[in-house]
Image (tube, rainbow, N blue to C red; front, side, top):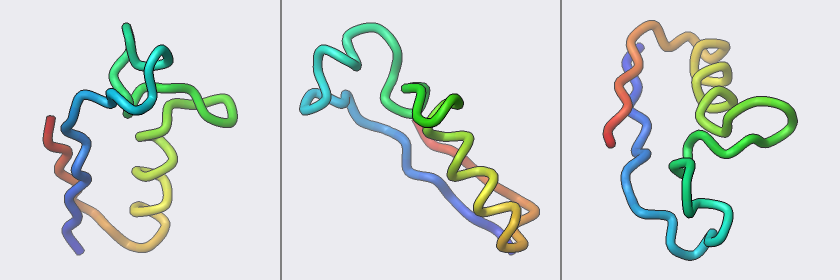
Length: 53
């Protein structure tokens, strides 16, 4: 299965948290937010994952 993560955007509503790191790299529960998405997609059977920016 193929998947695409839409990770573009400036994250303006999350300022000041996104002043320096991009929104997908914000730490949540000890790891970057994007890592949670990748892990769950892989667990669901995704073998090809594309992330836009």
